[in-house]
Length: 89
Image (cartoon, rainbow, N blue to C red):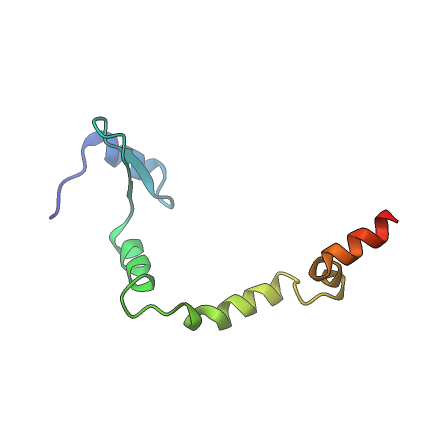
């Protein structure tokens, strides 16, 4: 089903072109998200029947490395309880 945007929705989309617009059903108070069709197709592909979370592990690992999770200083985080107790004593 395809419906035209009303003036208020079109204005919200034009004002925030890079962000989804939230819509609220005044009767049920349910919140919906209005996003561009190409963005929806990308999200839909991620959540499709053939989506397997393990397929994303290499990307998650690469992202963690870029964020510094392999930094030796993160060892304190990995052993938080031990590091915290040693510092308190």
